Length: 346
Image 1: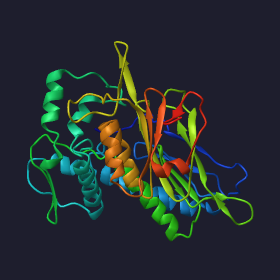
Image 2 (image 1 turned 90 degrees about the vertical axis):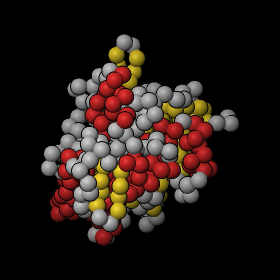
Image 3 (image 1 turned 60 degrees about the vertical axis):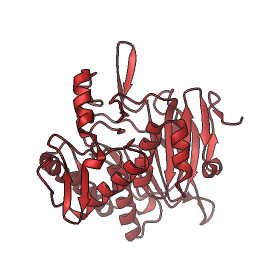
Image 4 (image 1 turned 30 degrees about the vertical axis):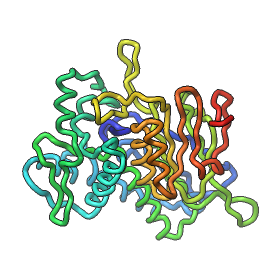
């Protein structure tokens, strides 16, 4: 199951996280935004923002879109999907890297995150004007084509075993893109910036404190039951990516019921468990991106068990009873601000 119905679909996307930054921070050029990767992507280079630097970063995003898009007919990923059932396809090192990472997370999550979920995502169309409840037969047929174990990745290329299968990297590719932008910023000597790819946040360095000291960036975590921009607490991070998956991100309603975009690879329906949202904090955005979806789909017990096996990964679990459970490392980073929620143990 994937957080987004088609990674690069042309649709309105709301931000998962509110960025709370000091208004006194000096900058030579305002933050820049562009619609790319299927969402509004914003970059704030603060005191080192120049037209040349911003153009370099957005040019990189546009290049990545032409690799990973499922909605551009000429993208590299679309070319692989057209060759499903026809043998191996040679792919670029970048596509191979992201597919290998996606396959890894499919394995450790037991298929909760599956890169071959394309037919199911396309069938539901959540996040597009054609979102609807598919007929049972359609869901069954899409599920039959969803199985990461029928994806082969090796030195000769990539292959999908059966015709009709399709890759969708909507739960991992923006994380890779955020990591790439952070790498380019470091290469250019930029020590402080915020990269926001439609809610995939990469906080590079820290914000200016007193004198020459750096203080953590303050990232607001969306209240999944509140209005857009309402936050339940604040994360304080330096050199970390923060990504949230939740039932409030994209959905449609029919017959008085909400159908959200995080789809189960078990029954083909929107995931139903006691999570409202899962926020992952990691050094690499590709990890935070993939794991926020995988952990959400797994549910409480399996998600907490998987998280415990992943060193360096922290998480904030928000449950439907308004309880919040923090991983050990997240306890030092998170400050609860909403009286509507309670921390586990309180």
